[in-house]
Length: 109
Image 1 (cartoon, one colour):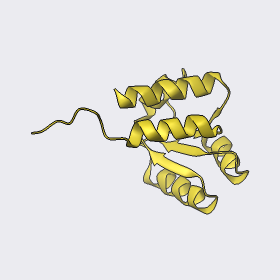
Image 2: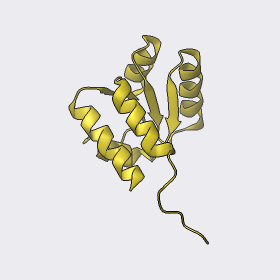
Image 3: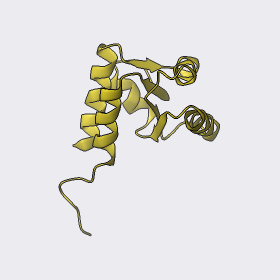
C-alpha cells in the first residue's frame, strides 16, 4: 500500500510538472540545486547508482533507491525510467515519508 502511494505521487508530480527524468536532465537539476529528491531504480547499473549518490551528496540532494525501471516508467506514464528527479519539496517529502515509514501492519514469520 505504501509503495503504491509513492508511485501515485510520482504520477501527480509528473502531471504537475515537478518531475524531471533522464540522466542529463536530472544531473542538471541536481547541479542547479533544483532537485529535492532523486530516485534511482533498484535495477540501475552500479555505475549509475554511484554517480547519482555521489552527485546528490555533493549538492545536498536526497537520493533514494526504489522500485525498478518498469514501475518508475509506468508511474509517470512513460516507458522505462532509471532516474527521476523531483523539483518540489512537498512531493519529495511525501514520497520519502511513504517509502520510509514502517507499515501499519507488521508481518511476523
